[in-house]
View 1 (cartoon, rainbow, N blue to C red):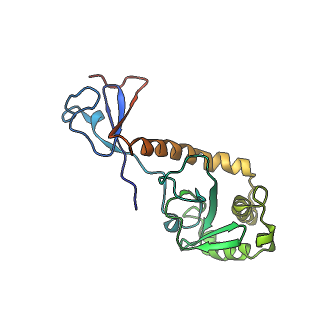
View 2 (cartoon, rainbow, N blue to C red):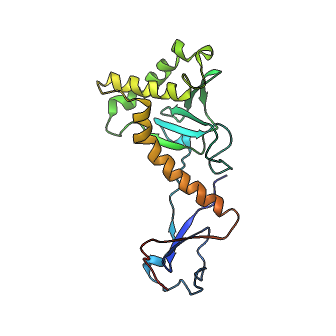
Amino acid sequence: MAAAAILRVRHCGAAIFCRRAPPLCPACGRPLRGAGLRAAPVLLPCPFQHGHRQPRAFLLRPSAGSFLGGYDGNSDLHVGISSTRGVVYNYNEEGIHKDETGWEQCISVPLVQPDMLGLLQQWDHLLEEFSTGEEWLPHRYEEHDHNCYTYALAFINSVLMAQGKQQMSKSEFTEKFVIPQTKNASKYIALHQELTTKDFYIVPLPDQEEQC
């Protein structure tokens, strides 16, 4: 089930987060109608995507549950690579999986640009062929040193190498592509959790953009 939307309203020098735009400012009690463009409700973009609708992407989700279903920020995460048709290839202690469900709420990092026609056509073949390697047999799995992230990054690097491009270390890929998205996701999760128990969540703006 899709999570309820989060709106942001700016008024009284504060950012007011809510599920539905209120007629009155919860901070000062004044009407928001006619308060100007800055007070208009803005829908926050959700950082999570339906993984099976994200072709040729690096996907990240909690190993159990979902990001907006009680994720505490410390539980294990699982990663995979999607095919052209949204089948998610991933690796764990049971070996390679090809999931057609279960990745409906993910952080998604697109891996192929629209103008990369050759790679677009070869993607599924490359992914399937790579996933048959002996290094991805169940007995090779190690929780910390040979895991789902190892598999996904190794595939990405195999594609980069085939294109004559420089391969990426785990830290480089994580810092460049994953951390920016997880930071944004963490903020969204925090807002979502606040609004499960209250109607409004008010955060003062440092520059006091709007006064009563």
